[in-house]
Each structure stands twice: as structure tokens, then as C-alpha cells.
Image 1: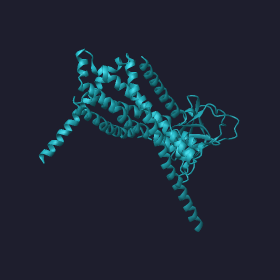
Image 2: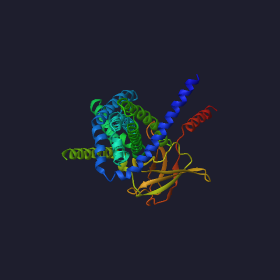
Image 3: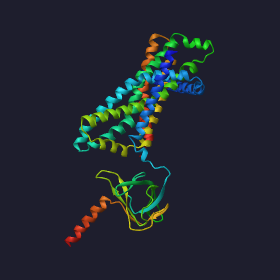
Image 4: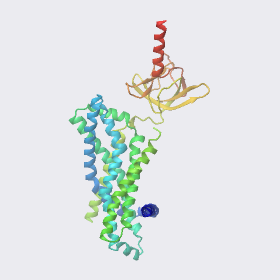
Length: 260
Length: 155
């Protein structure tokens, strides 16, 4: 019995240590951010890696999420004869929740793993130590551009996800199920708010971008320099990002729409 | 060099796409372009009961949105609700004996302020007060009124 408590205590300590050191790492990264903009080439390359290469999965997922949202909601709304509200429902669900959250989860799987394993392999093959030997700070040279790239890419990806989702919802609802097109857009425009819905969603995805990029570079940078260590860092990146995004999502939603 | 160029073009395209998506979300999906800026004037109206009127509820005249509710406060001296209406500058010719009432959109819709034009030759100016107002209908009061009127009949 005592052993069990001891194990729990150790894992709590372990969690707190990881949490604390990731925050300290964030401070270290933020200190290097201004200097990183002096070399925009590095950042552009990372936006390409995290953003452009994730476009296909984000766009296609968004499209199908919008389609299925439309299909599911149509059947429920048809019972009340309120199928014209389909546009509002799809727009609110996509801009407020699905866009930021699903994008962050896909980002963790597509770009987060790539970042973590890339930096982890650099660690395992002593490239990071090599940089230190040459008096190049690996945090500034390797980590910061990747972090900035992820933070810039995430809100843009979330916006693309929502837009593609609305396109899917429109295609399914208006073209296939025959909802009136005018009502679809008009109700949406009268009930979706720029600040409370669209910008709140973008703000959320910005925060998720910070969390997802930080966890990916942190896990990669601190991975154990073996093949197993890198694979474990990659797994932990996805698991921790998913948890962090879902918890942060609840907290942000509660804070943002608390007064409405 | 060729590869860097491709990367840069791809990134530019991606950022461009993201901004287009954002633009689409703010202009096509929301009522952003009907947001009136500082152009406009403010009217106040006092109501005994505002029902569930909220900030930014629409103010409409003959069904056309002419402004929105910009503040709701409770006056603890007069014991009334004071509602400020921000009217779009385009609609500057509202007769100054018009009356304001709180109405409901549809069965489940939100509440809004409806202006009914009067016959005066003069128009509302900034900071004017609407003299004739009608409060929101509260369902419980309606029901009790109905019940009492039925009770009176039986006597």
C-alpha cells in the first residue's frame, strides 16, 4: 500500500517537474524570439514545414467534418422544421470549437511529431552538442524558428479548416439536401458575431499553437538520445498535446463566453 | 536555390490562403460589414420592464435594422430601466414623437426594440429621449391578467 502511494507521489513529482521545466523552456524560447526575426529565412522554412505540408490533411478533414456536421444536424433540425438554421449551427460549431480543436489535434499528429522526432534525432546524433561546441545556441538556431513557425501556422490552418468546413456544410446542406441557400447564409450572418465567435476561435487556435509547438520542441529537445528515447518523445508529444489542447480549450471557452 | 524558391512560394501561398480564409470568415459568415462605426447618434428610452433585451440587440423600424442597443442600466431613482439606442447616421429623419416598444422575433427569437414612426415634423437629435415607450410583455403577467379577467366575468 505504501508503495502505491510512493509511486503516485513520484509520478506527481515527475509531472510537476516536466510542467515546470517546459515553462522555463518557454521563457528561454521567448527570449530568443526577437533575434529570430533577423533571419526570416529560417522561419519561412519552418512555416513551410508545419503549415504548407499540413494543408492537405487540414483542408480535407475540414471539408468532411463540415459535410458530416451538416448531414447529422439536418436530420435533427428537420424534425422541428428548422433546417434553415443549418448554416448558423455549422458556422458556430466550426468557428468556435471544431476549427481550433480539431486543427490542433491534427497539427499535433502531422507537424508536432515531425518537430519532436527531428529535434530528438539531432539530439541523438549529437548535432545539438556540436552546435554548442561551435558556440551556437541550439535553442536559438534550431528550436526558436520551429516554435515561431508553428505558432504562425496554427491560426491560419484553423481558419482554413473552418472555411473548408463551411464549404463542406454548404455543399451537403444546400446542394444535396436542398436547404434554401438564402436562408443558409442570411441566418448565419445575422447570428454569428465577429468578436465573440470568429476572433475568439482564432485566439483559441493561437493559444493552441503555442501549446502544441512548445510541447513538440520541448519533448524533442529533452528526449533521451537513443532510438527508443526519440520514439517515446514523439509519442509523448501527441499524448501531451492532445491533453493540453482539450484542457486549455475548456478553460478558454469558459473564460471567453462566460459572460454571454 | 531553386528549392528555397519553391519553399518561399509555397509559404507565401499558404499565408495568403490563410488570410483569404480569415477574410471569408469575418465578412461572409458574420455581420461584420453592417457594423456601424462611430457614425450615428444616441437616443435614450425608459422602460418599466425590458424583458430579456440584451446589449447589441437590434433596433428596427418597419422591420429594417436601423441601430442597436448600446447600453442598458437601471435608474435607481426613477426605478426604471434606461436603454441607450445607437442609431445609424443614415437614419437621421426619425420623427421625434416616435414610440419605442420591446418586441420579440419569432416564437423562440430574441427581443428587439421596435420604433413606430410618429407624425411630427421634427426629427430626433443626439441624446434625445424617446417619450412614448411600451415595455416587454411578460408571459406570467399576461396569464395572470387573463385569469383575473376570467374571474371578474364569473362574478
